[in-house]
Image (cartoon, rainbow, N blue to C red; front, top):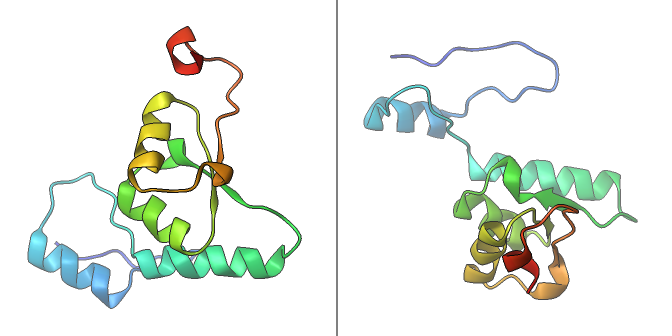
Length: 112
């Protein structure tokens, strides 16, 4: 199983670490493998491009604790759509001031 090299504008090619991981672990497919260094670098580039903006990561996009922790270390804020996402962020000890639980449709149990 080898990695596919894509040449698309704005797409980051798999890193050697991802290639090594795939070769060593042979995870079942389909799967998503992310290099957290790339996640951090992309967040920092976005911050640099938009210095006046507070950036919120939509946890529902990928609620993996590793991704949320990496972004939290970089200073990200988080947009939450469920009490489960809130529990993930609270479990990582992200300060409440950096969390937005603004989904307009919630169960009563999520707001009581």
